[in-house]
Image (tube, rainbow, N blue to C red; front, side):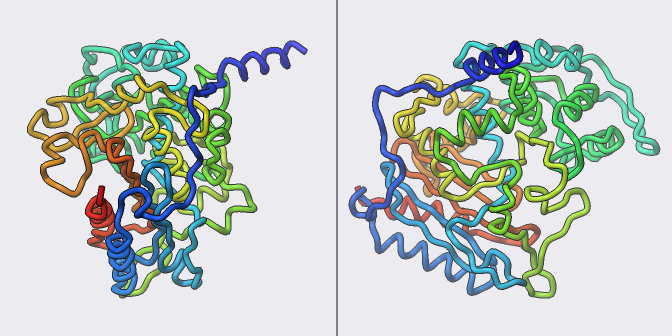
Length: 429
């Protein structure tokens, strides 16, 4: 009985969404003209993607375009698996990799709204292993040994959200020294089929040296994996359960998971590459591309582990475009959304001269980016994933675009940039 009461208490405490004062509709289909966009110009986008398939620049894709909460275009192109001749469909599921980061950041901010912590709290307050961080000083290549010096400050939750913690990214890190250190320590960088849990991984990570003092540099990192474990500590739930209960289920994201149910595994798109001018299945030396449908299924990577559909991810973005509400449920307040979509990095990212910035969950278009054309209005937010998935959302024009592909090491592919550019060129009013 005591355990039951505790579980009920935890469940109540972590029920993050609330009833909204207004109710937006769920995503439904409408014509481009009904929301002030041109069907003829949308057709150009379709032609561009069909041409990319014909020229074998990409093997396949799914695309969705939304304006004013209406799906004005959704289509699938080419093949989900060329060697096995599986035709791409709108409901195919993709490994979204770093597109997971915005979902993790959103979950963090939902807990922040409940008063569970403050953004400038040191993470060591919740994960003690991060106490007294150190920065890499000297490194010996022969045996990967190193010396350190004390960092000048603690890592905060804000640092982790904005990739300014000083942490690295192991195998995909740009610094060979960090790659060696992370490998020697046995850090899981992205995802795994092995029976590893995020808490064990993060505790090992906390003992390693940083690239730089916290708050000094933007260094793409495992910060969102740390925050996945932080969510478990603060919520009292597994990270996967927290997302399912507080985001995916109430938002109707029925095809978004860390690990796919057996009944949906056949819908996973194959990762493909080109060998001798033929599309083949991609294999890699440091992870198993089949991780979402096999293995131990115990590692929940907040930075890279989720799989989803174009429509599910567009639904998540629509909540942001709606100012934090979707289908009568409020996930974040309007004021929190404004903070998330505000540049956090200033000169660290490039200052006023930069066309882009970075908020608490997304890359951002700044005024100079608007002038470059094709990216959207100021505060349009975006990101992408390791396996060639991409999205953007313009809260001013209320436009969302998601283009999902599943490729690696294929050379130049401009379809994501052209897709975005041509969507804005289709706006009539």
